[in-house]
Length: 275
Image (cartoon, rainbow, N blue to C red; front, side, top):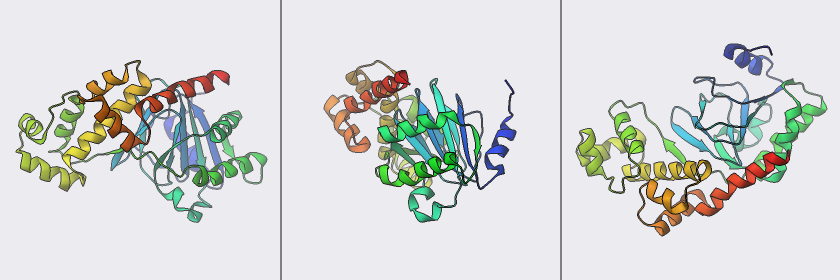
């Protein structure tokens, strides 16, 4: 098998702006921060990945895809082994027709999209205009705004603020502590509660408590899909001492009950096993 360097692959994706580019691989996280001249759709069969941009980190769970607009600097990171990562890079000819194509979004994959993704696995590399393959991919792109009306509303703000980064790490490392507060985190990291509150608003444009809630929900989503822990074990493991409070918060933020979200894992595995 011929090995292609990262630089050669990135060049190949954008070498011909008029083409679509299809690339199926076990990893896309071989790249550090980079951007494409084309819009990117990534769908992961099995496993989960995180998408990192300059402003936020996004959790990409099973049975969801991410749309990354052209020009957005990013990198992907696998936390668990994935079966296949399907990447389709679209030319930007029609991007002006719908605001959907100009913002990052993570969306559920219905059966129609899944079958189209699987059908595209027979291709790799450039797909030229005026071919049946190009028409198929163009149709796929065209229906995305129609079937993807409700993005996953979970994204964790990030910051380059060097004073705050150790605080964020402390929070992530201690999510199971149900007593995390401005006071306790401030004491552990050398800030007064008032200073820490102001620092979050100034550097992150969000509150300490909203960040903590988002971080707990993302960790819970990860555990629901990648472990066999019960929902009560997961709730306690991310700092909730009430299962009903955890379930209600999860439903409000994710749009599904924890049990419904966990079912995505089996639905995806079943679909993969049939292919």
